[in-house]
Image 1 (tube, rainbow, N blue to C red):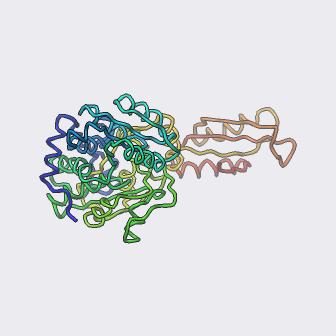
Image 2 (image 1 turned 45 degrees about the vertical axis):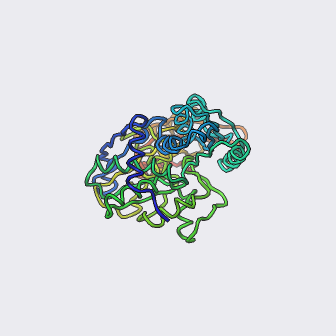
Image 3 (image 1 turned 135 degrees about the horizontal axis):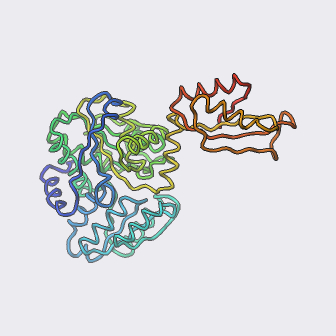
Length: 403
């Protein structure tokens, strides 16, 4: 099979000049230290619609014939592709219908609608929405704009690599988050053509390791189920086309855990001052944990910044817990005046901040009728600080049970 070539990619770049932003690359001292060498961030979270998806979606729709445009376009997405299709179609005067799962984040649903698409909520997962979109395409004649498995989409995403190699001419490694494989396919196609020796590393959530499993099997496989906070990468099946790109052009594909994704998001929020979504933190997590050998300078593609504020709070808390910055536990006190104050004094004595307390008498099985149970949530400096806290409390006679 033939891959998209530099001419097609450069034509896509010209097509996107008036539509997409040339997103910046930002240095990150903390990530460079954790990765082991100079590492910069390609900030597609600052792109129009909040992710790289506008590149591929617009390029695909722009290449349709007048007759095809007259029939409208249809897509399925949990959020970022939906917004890219909606805006791309609106800019080109094309009617768009986007099927989204009922559980899609509300901000992404609202944004898709505001960009001009007719939004239809269908099913509980992406696969349900995709099946409904395919049926709609067959019945209405609308053109399907696939989120990753199409040459025009891949060529659009490939324009990111053109920018990276202009902005970081000596880049030696590009680290890319993987869902269905469209982004890494485009990046690899462009980068390997311009710089054959450059290293391309893909990173997947361990709970949605679609391409990892496919590469192991030697063919595209469909995962029976997926589970990840990185909803933008939650694809049960890679594309037949993107699988071939990854198999032939990508140097390594690795996985990261949910805890590591949350830590990556926390790092971006706290230290890089960037608002990113969990999918964008996947590549960051791969660099932080040095999952694959990296040659430097390295560029990590931060793929998007569309995150529900409620999810952001949960992920940050999850990341703080994973990093030993947040700890929940319970213990027992004698049911008499001053005991809670004594416990608080012991906690304050090791410099720990209490952020939540629940004091219960009723509905608890006590070892003694004179005991009460107390659950606490505290903020700390890291794992060693947790050990110090537990040692101090046990020294004072408290039994500590982690929650």
